[in-house]
Length: 496
Image 1 (cartoon, rainbow, N blue to C red):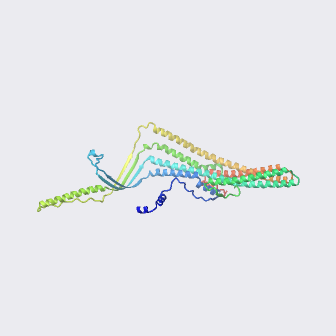
Image 2: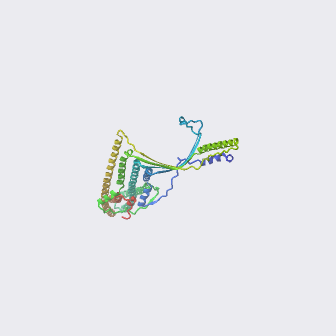
Image 3: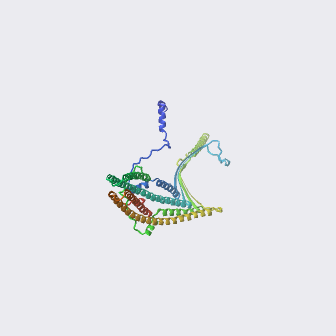
């Protein structure tokens, strides 16, 4: 290998070494390739539930809490461990710590151990309570995640239908531009026949320019809203959305409000999260006295243990003893050839087949502090304060859910009435603008009156669009206030 390396140019060797080095951990990683999607209201909500950064962070928190709970729960079960150990020790002129007892350590020592051990905490109150508390923390985090998912679904739905509204605003701006262009054509025609002064043409041209500016602004707002919604759900900014022709008009639930409140108290994650927090606080008070409970621990092991050095030393002693016995026998036979001398009994060699071992033990322990200087009382006082706070949060969650449902019902009914008024106003304003356009062509009213009527119609049309969005968002919030099992279903208005 050395001769081959010497035959390669130094530059090539350096390049190979650099290529073999690990990549720099601080180097920027390439961004993952994402293809733009096309989303409806429901698919946009589902995509946001799977890709929103805040939800992913909460899921990571749940995974960490679940790992802690799994570790705490595993401590309640017997542990089974396999062990392979090799021990080698050599020393010279070392008396050791047992020299005062006349025990001299061997200069060479080795030992091989193969065993399976198990430890089972048969009863330990702290471990059980700790595992239960960790479980409550996981449940609380999951309910918090569900609450975040519901809020995300509401926000994405609001953004989606706001985007639909901005597209309708473009239609309103386009119709306004057509209206103003028609007034400009009428003003020019009237000027040619001497019916109106040239100032009406100037005013009409100004109104047309203002309408064009409003149209450009509406188009820009719609494009910005598309990109904002795409980023909000975690999709590429150039993603597209399948928008309905207009903002839908779903019906409100016809169930009594009291029945909706009962349904929400059973299904809302805020109440479940507060209850899990309350249960965890109760367990925290019990954890204060875990040191007063006895502990019982079972230990067991079985395996094989061999010391090669001890076997070698023992075999050497056996060989020396057998050699001495043979030498003594030969000596006696030489001195007394005619004597009846029995042959020596030789020691057998060291057996290499060592029997396995097993052990079993029970350790029970109970201890109680005689004087703790008020530590236990202070801990109970602190945990009881946490229990009171958790109970208050639980009651507050019930009241908040009830108030939220009732407010959502009232807001839905209010926006429904406002939508009906907005529809009526938009229809009347549109008809007034149409009549005003005909009157201006006939010379009955001035350009200022016609333009003012059109501005009122445009404002009424925009108010109608806003009322539609407010109503559909109120319906979604009411459905979300009932605690649906799947937050995305609350944004699905296709079956309503």
